[in-house]
Image (cartoon, rainbow, N blue to C red; front, side, top):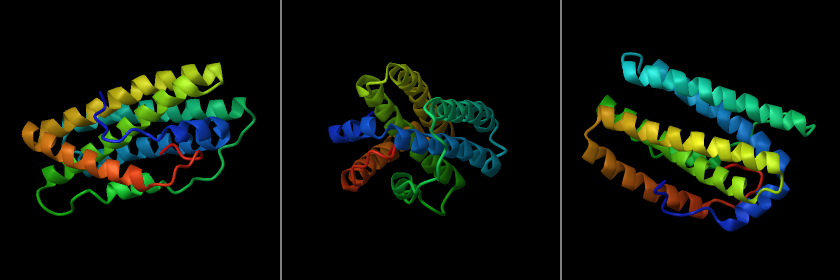
Length: 193
């Protein structure tokens, strides 16, 4: 369904289930970054009515996810901790083409956002299936469903501003590049990506 070219290494979920405080902290910051990304798109493209309307709803939902992750941290006696560098997102964002037509830049931004949501969805699914904590299984299942919706939202928005064939071709390029990034990242149980 997600189209990812390389599945997450099974060792990640094994490590992640043993370092749940670290995963929850990193996850909280991922939700905060997702909300910030939506705000950034609104600020950069205020004339795109559908984009603004869609991102407004998405920002509210991502922020509610941030609040939910904070509640899970507090429930377990953990604090938010410090933000950590997200090498995965940094490397993905470097794939965005600069210059050229503004619609092409917007398409790249939307497709990179879709990739991040797709990878998050895949990892939430793994956690919902493997984590021993029953309440976190349910929590990650619910978030997996939401992330799948976000992933498709970004893809559909890209098709709103660029021809579908152009979007599909660029999506395939980015899926391949994302797989190469994932293949070279260290497997860390303290990072969502």
